[in-house]
Image: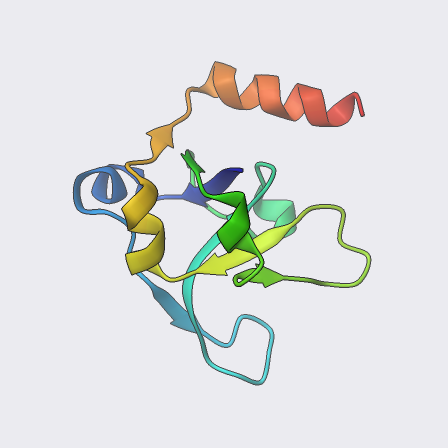
Length: 108
């Protein structure tokens, strides 16, 4: 599945790979990993940064990392960096590539 990660550290990730983030992420439990979604998210959905990275991740592994929220219109995944880095490197999307995906989403 094609997954997306919005970030202000795209150059660093492209050179060194993803690194785990650690936090509560609106839960009572400390979580660790890298957030991905099945569509490009923006600041309105909690994603910050100018860079949008895309990576292909095996569908059969996604179930272990999916974070399901009631009423959410997209899928989100919290994947450990050491796992996701096995399937890289990611691709940094151009503004045109991102807009094409966003337009596709609007027309559904």
